[in-house]
Length: 82
Image (tube, rainbow, N blue to C red; front, top):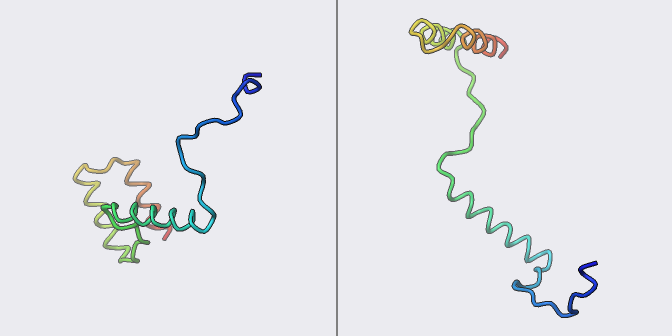
């Protein structure tokens, strides 16, 4: 029971918590400052493109050796599932 012998008035190195309205405003300001430091725009849903052109691009990457057989198969299955 270590806390039993603690002095009743303990020095706190921080201020008391804010009321809920002030805390919500503070959290919003922190979030806005964080968002302003982001370098990239948030990812948006990919625009539906021409699946034939996308498939030919994948085939070209596979033929050049940039994609392995397994990577090509997964990318092709994702493309065809759209």
